[in-house]
Image 1 (cartoon, helix red, strand yellow):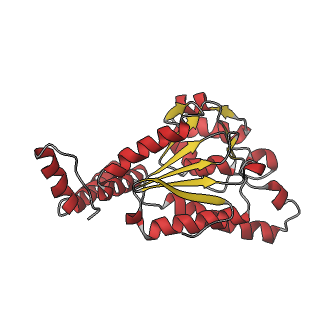
Image 2 (cartoon, one colour; image 1 turned 180 degrees about the vertical axis):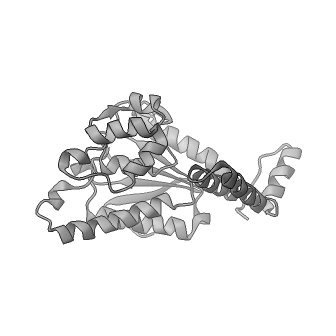
Image 3 (cartoon, one colour; image 1 turned 90 degrees about the horizontal axis):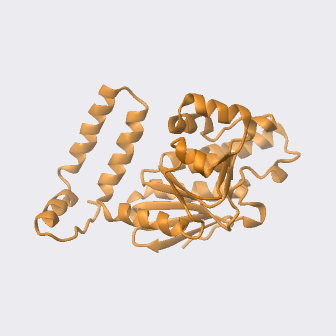
Length: 263
């Protein structure tokens, strides 16, 4: 298995992948290498979606999920160097957003700036009680450039998103839950176990179904209702001729657990 300098990739359960941002000495801040490592891993997930059925993304250590871009590395960068690095981050984000496999973010601590943007690329978020979120870019003379101005309004609504984006103020996991950005708050010591438990449930379902559902929801959020309904039916019809559909119905009638093959 390929190893990476700034992240770890593990397989804690059948068809489940655990990706951990692994620079705890700098609050898992994202440097150029982390961008390249995440791009490589998520490109692989996009290219071979059948190899995994659910992905859990978390950070190493107890304090931070990801503090955002590594500002020490960025200090003194020329405009060209900055933009070259950001292009890597843009490609990484596109690979994450475009990943057909369901992604759960297990936010184990601070998720600031680019770290919060990474969490928003997941399909949903579980957060530790002490987790805090912020998009602080405006306080540094820049703005979110990894999906923050697009994914956040889709999660919390435009007016709440603009308050978060324009102030740069941090907010708590409890606020994130109330605003609809976080699905569940967990005790720090059980966060990863709870995320992996949900991942196991997703991984136990028919993988073509879960990928089609994800794609259908994402498409519907970005189009009108009639077009979304048409896309849903096309996605639905993809299920009918599959072995998994036949297995699911047979298992129900035979009162046993289905065994899905992804075909």
